[in-house]
Image (cartoon, rainbow, N blue to C red; front, top):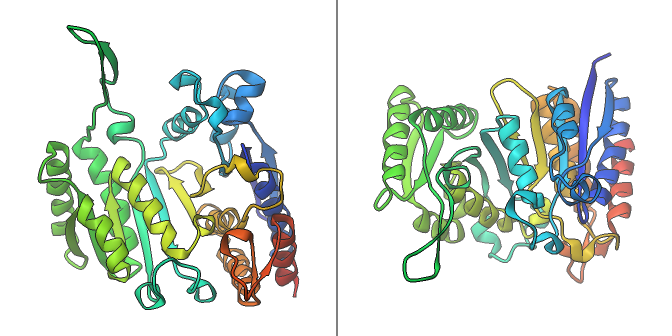
Length: 360
């Protein structure tokens, strides 16, 4: 029997609720497919600040490095906004990504047939949407140096951040995109701002070199503002979207809303050979925390990505996704996806329905 060590990072807000639901489903499906999951829960974000004054305790990072995979829910809360930047929950996540060298963020966006009427866009626009955003995660403006604030002559303050990429960083993330594209429709759209940014000009040059080495893959380029427009106008044109850290952060959230709710989107953050981090795209939603209103499906689908990518338990992953689709097809919804023709469920009840579908 295969045995795996999984670190759970429930985090803040709705995180503990959706983690509890997802853990139950993982325990259920591991028994069904005869493998063993050993869970270890650790602190990150606001919950870590409350207990250790550190958004990423060393104990958490050590446990993650020693695991087979990390499954995280969500972090953050407005009550921490007045803390120094290095003490905020989001810094813990950035440190985790850096500490694990998680340079590639993979965000699939696929329209579930049963949710086609839940999108704010017309069904004919989104019907065939099936894309993946490949975002570089450990470089760019979030990590560039120098950064900070300085006083300026005559009074006032100047704040600055540096966007920078090396050719090696661009090549590394491009490799991931080209490999993914080869398993799909063999199309990549690289998103940059090469008309005004030197760093984007280097980005485009390196991606073009990758394309020459991969002539079976069709490569196109879009400036980020045009790409944002095209995602709303004709999202089905995209297969794999390759972009940097800042642009990927924005584009992937926009793409997530094509599905009708950001509560439906999973993601994976990967490195070369260590444990990956799997997490829903959405935030911690502290306004609905502990009210049994959260949608756990993005967390559940993130667990399915973990099963498939990190643990190579592809059959179990497919079964979990199939159970989600079955429950949605039956007309059950959490509040974020509700309309008058469906049946509303709470977070816990949605988990129970999916568990029943697994066992049917």
